[in-house]
Length: 206
Image (tube, rainbow, N blue to C red; front, side, top):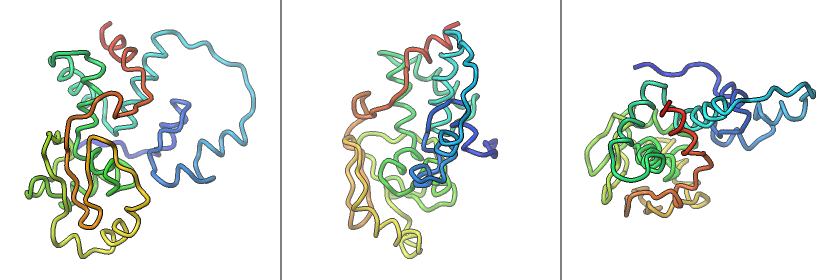
């Protein structure tokens, strides 16, 4: 399976915003964006066209959820076929991905780490082992851990720090057993995404 293997910090610098791709590290002075801000030198600003702004918004969303262009385009095509507003459908589909749900539940510090948990066979969906990060979580689905994984040091670390983490309103979490459940489907307000979905739709409509 194709995946991005270069530095995640390059993606943040490319978009000019902090995308929190490395979890807790992004909140420390070690963050590349923080170092760049402190040591930046003023230069001549280039004017960005409307098409360029649309591209930046699309890349910000794609990088944030860790998708390659072909994968992202496939999700966008799925959003177009659904009734309603395409931009909102796109955000909801991305939010319902299993790797994102694991990240939102606090089982991982980043979506890339959550994706690794799925691929290594640590996660159960409705009691069955799931190894595909792109599975779409449906209303009523439960997300838990494989029994053998609950004995690992990583699970104990997550359990110890789970109280300090907040969970989005469309998910619930049993913090004692680390079992989550989707009580509804995500809405744009619940996602709280800082992306211009309209610009992304316009980018692909040309």
